[in-house]
Length: 563
Image: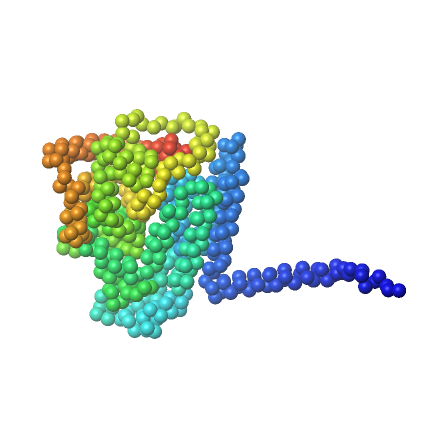
């Protein structure tokens, strides 16, 4: 007889099963710790930083998909606050290019909820300097093993400024010229492909999840960040910006020393000056705030409407003021940091000039035609975003002061359809608009910070009108003949009539501006504060945004709605 024991299935003991479970878990934990330590100390934190961003994106998706209660008007505000805080912490902790990406949120402050704009306005492009030996290693790698002391007569190892991507040192060349030496931080070059790859993935995923037009901006953002990290591009931008300045201009671009410039090291002429928002420094030099801001607005208006080669990061630290070398009694603005530029096509430049001219003339059909060619459906709202003032041809002002929080919730719940309607065909939308808005918003913010001493809108409109018949100095002869065809076809009397109407509209805008200036001064004499011109425009644009998108933008105690 045979025993049935050999047919009885054997079962593993509980201890054996626990061992089989524990071993993979222990191996995974050990591998995770090893990867974390390697990434932290050797791998420039590329894995840690991007996993942190992916996890934040997963939490964000959950918040907006499942944590908004249509019956609770305050739930959306709480989600905005939580998500804004989460992404602010991610950008601040990750540093490097994430600071740049975080700052780009500030440039969306005319459409993002107040919870985002308030928080991200505190994100500044500053960071602790890296150890001296690390920065010197970058220098030696780019200069064939030579140290700064071998290249320069003097080199200060202590940086005078440190930002997210690079830090700046003072030096003196062998021929005695004082220079600023900008050296890229060592980990940036290795982090860029990982960070931008993660950024592409996140935007693509969020576009699919929320069904919103988002990915169309990715290529332009990634290209601009890559170019900003290549100092040879910055050197070339500085050269082209200098060539684009008109003869006798009161703007100046410091000279780049090409023999002392590489992909990660840039050497430029040292220039002494004060920031354009340093009121006391300007007064000490004997310059009026109005004259300086007039120069600033005119300089960037020339770039936008006449040359199409536009500085995209003109914050106060990048625009200095000094006495003009040949005429010390006059101010001269000095443009720094040329890593981020918009190189607009001639077609875009002309269309953008025509857009502004149509907006000033209150030509709704002309505005709509340009917007339609750019894939923009809501031309009135788009025009308001370009002017940074309400644009409502033939309509009364929008009043939403009595809008309730329930109304705001309903509008925001329908935000997706409004945004999709605004940009109905992103393939047609010019990529130049992405960074152009950054320039205009920074200039507007500087003018406001100084008390609105100049009529920014009228100045820009004047240059937009010039741009419709101006010959771009950056074009070749054949391009010039093609570009001027849109002017030569105009009927002379019609062109003259349009010019008269345009000037009349500018006169009307100027009357409104100067009335606000008189009101400001009268209140100042009485010891009271009054709104400036930019403050009035901000309130109007805030109302337009609330009516169109449902974002209730609140002004702080300083009247700031846009950071």
